[in-house]
Amino acid sequence: MAFLVARYRVRLSVLLLGVLAACQSKTDSGTTTATAPVQQPAAAGPQDSPGTWYRIYRGTLGTDSITLHLQTWPAGFESRRNASFVGSYSGADGQPYELGTDYNTEAKPDSIVLRDRDLTFADDNGSGPVWRLRLVGKELMGTRGSQRVQLREATLPGSITFASRYFTDSVAAYPGKPASPHGRTSLHVLLPTSGPETIRRTLTDGILRNLRGDSLATKAVPASVQQYWQQRFSAFQKDYRASVADLAPNLPTNPDTSSTAPSYDYVLRFEDQAATHVLWNQDNLLSLGFFSYSYSGGAHGNYGTSAATFNARTGQELRFKDILRSDAQAQLSALLEQAVRRTLKQPANVPLDQFLFVKKMPVTYNVYLTSGGAVFIYTPYEIASYAQGEIRLFVPREQLRPLLKSGLPWGGGEVSRR
Image (tube, rainbow, N blue to C red; front, side, top):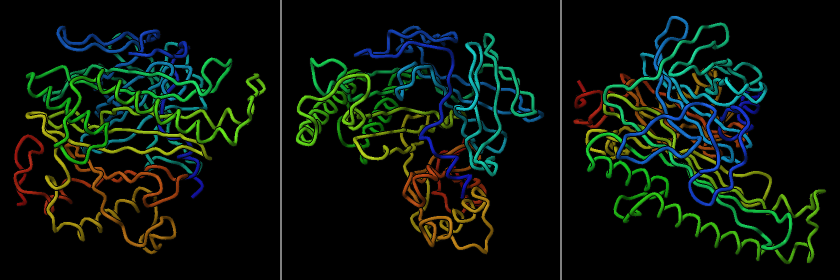
């Protein structure tokens, strides 16, 4: 299990790029500048916040053709001092692999250094191959381990273009006192900029509902992302001040605010983060991940990713009940056991509860589609320890075909169980 513990000591994979000033803006991140050129949005649509964008790259990894989805956020996200990147890539089989920061390699201002985070590639130390790339205009060039990487920015058939918006603010635990600890909240949202307005609005509503954690599509959504941010910040501000008041009896009456760091300082550095990830985006199939992280005292924060797939032709979300038949549970559990053993490199004769919390694989409704299959996401503590982190299991489409709902719009047409 050592490679798993090492693999997931950090919550979300990100990459350092250049040195950017810490972001403390009370609205859109407007005080940072991106090292890389900023993608130009559609003329009439929303624009990227400075220092943050989403792009698609296509090209070759060694002799294989791949598609890379890459995103960046400005300094300040996750309290980091530098810009950060996260992404995923896939080949012809449609299986996505996560990419994120390599904490052991210093990135130069003109470079992008990524590391494979998928457990498939983890060695005994929990490390995957390192990507060393240079961004030159619209091209990404470099290496992954010993393989050559040549990618170029592209627009895929049936894909959605997005503007990347970022908001952040903080609340002082002791307003007016020097060096007061702060609670910090941030929000990253992708807003569709292509397609008919009605579809963009439907997609935007779905994105905001998922960021808010709505289980049903009946609750009214905010009129704009700015309104949602204001609601989110107001709620955080209220909760943080209530928590500070609750903790006050156990804190010094006159807290030491010197740079030598009193004990209360760490306890009151609350974090609340939400971000949108592109997981798949082509052939009128859009899958997004909604990452959340929260720290409100204790040994560590809690995090997780919930996923959603949308029919890009209509903007409508495809929920679990729209994808899989109601009688698919038993067969799906068996497929998920095969997938978890492949991913964690465990043979069939080793009981599940020797490397997981469960004796039988539960079926999670936290799933998204790619052209080649479905990815099932288990968040920390759901089936394994916090140190093992999120576990993502890919089940190929052909294995799922007998379990799919007839008429599912997947892969350019409606699914048949034949």
